[in-house]
Length: 313
Figure 1 (cartoon, rainbow, N blue to C red):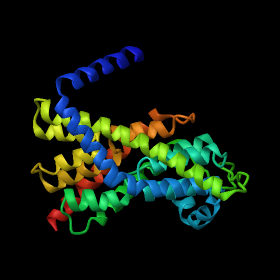
Figure 2 (figure 1 turned 120 degrees about the vertical axis):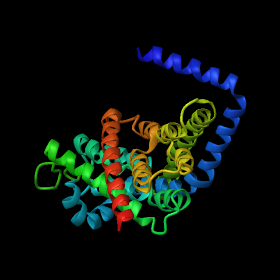
Figure 3 (figure 1 turned 90 degrees about the vertical axis):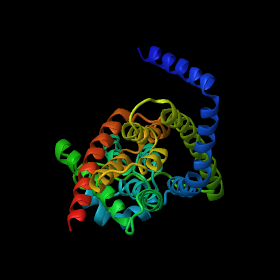
């Protein structure tokens, strides 16, 4: 069945390329320019730095600083604090990649890695502040979007902890910190980190290009109402969908809730990017997607309530 679905998708893709060459050309340019001007400078330094820190075993510094808060807030081990911190600060798919690296080094268990993955992989603060908050929503104080997004991530983690009865803090039998052997040649580690980061960021650019083509095709070809079309594009690719969804004239509470929900999910493009960085691990992409759908619902409810109350004050 999976092979049949893949073959059907490939045939539809080829048909799309043949029937709509202009849409394909414009979509590819849009995706690649967006990747080059926005994603590449924002994510690449984080990718190089986080990879270098894992290779040189300097993650313990970040873990020690974050542990007093994150161990209590999220119930993670000391070693698990590092991917949580990097994920909350950097954005898709750096959080997932850092989880995969720390898990691959044997610093955290598979169960804890899957748990951290469910909430640490989010849109970056700069994307929320500058693009969604300022450009799309014209907000005077866009920091509230980041606060609501992080709150949805914490509530999502709390729900999982209660449901699964997770507690990975040291001393309770979960997620003990096992440091990897330190690499002697830091120049070699830096070279490997740069190469690894460029491989991943190139994959991200490829996914953004492909999903931008599909998004542009949906915008120009699908005969459905604009609201449904733009939300669908947002579910597909949040950057293109956000710009289009901002054109709609909806109630502030509804638009704010949908924007926040779409950002919490990140779009199928970010799911594909995350699946790519997890391909060498046994971590479940399906469980990750289910967790992001749950966070999307939480974020929508938080955003709708927040902007509704603000509109009444």
